[in-house]
View (cartoon, rainbow, N blue to C red):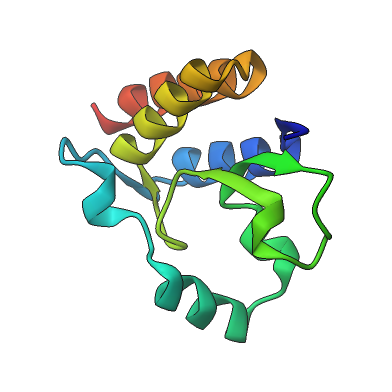
Length: 116
């Protein structure tokens, strides 16, 4: 898989965090991660570029207009979730994507600072 950091998503997440659009949740990301029906509902009302903003990873081997191109989600299409960033960071570390791991960690630290 040729996945790399999606800098557009990092900038978008940073803006959301700075605007206070965060959930400092301590649950499991599986409880908050949008399922396929929520992803499809979002895409029915938004462009693929907006969908991309919610994913820290970008697989350039997949078509630009496919959901399969985007990996490492961190939010629910409304807010940045603490547990989403943790999950993205952990999965990126396990899969060897250091740039995504580092970006998720940086965003996590920013979220925790803003949540205080």
